[in-house]
Image (cartoon, rainbow over all chains, first blue to last red; front, top):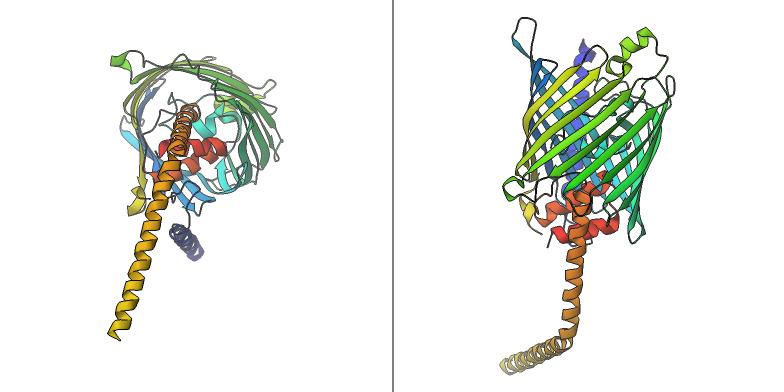
Length: 358
Length: 102
């Protein structure tokens, strides 16, 4: 009993001490952390809040959430960044009453060191660099559709370890980007990660606004499955259109999936220039030869699934967005309608009073 | 003593005036020679502005709607964060930071 009480206190004390050291370093660094452009980086609190009502196969859910991100620059080469999440999901229980379920976690908590112009080292808990959705498109103020794609559960989404990443211009019209990582096994119920390794290689043509790439992930525990994937993102210069796609295939029990999404901003019609139309089609193929017990254990990953979604996003300001979407999911014996409506707000604020000064 | 002090004051004043005049004349000279350099610099700034705007839209617009321009010190942190998150190259990062802090 006693140790149960003391352990969280020790962790809290260590956390407070760590936070104190980080803030001290950061404040100290403000004196000499002038970048090549002459500006001192300032600590920032950013992130998003959201409120969404979801109706999944007739079941209502209301979910307010907040995802703060803390950015602490140290000198001109270091950055400490951490993202947390907190949400309370209200849904009707068997008696017809609304019941709230709180969930919270830490998406990432990492230290970045910019070693040189081509390489950055990352240590801590970070989002696995696999394709583009997890790292770039997942935040609710960024994602075009609030329902996540079927590819997401196929790979391991978070890692605890080290990563090397960066980008360099191959030619005047080609940027090459890369990320390589390794992760340790962690069984903590909030911060669970697999022992794995992998990476991503991308080619970005800024003039054509086209990016293509491939990813690989090898899990080094249990039945040691590996996953591979490819991705594409294209924004034609002549139209306010974005086309994105990902494909992922796993050698283990998690099957394979792909999605194609198009986002069209109605910027050519002045009255509707803040509105964008979104469409996404996706398919998930369950692994073959799965036993009945494995299918039951895998849940949604145990059955072939087809899904089509259509959505609208309206930007009240660049940081406030109202969204609504409808999707139809086709699963053997259990088709479902997926409705979503809500709002997101992205906030950014300096953590020192002189945030706006040079 | 008073005479020494006065002499020292006069010498110091003469030296200061001389230095100021020299600085002023070198400024004028710099102005004369800076005219073509300034035009060149202005053209370079314009070209970097255009390139920065292009890189901003092609890199940042891939994932999200264009954000507003934040104060320079905030922008420096945000661009550093995005350099890591979206693997933006060092060259693109500098052009974007310059464009966003103009």
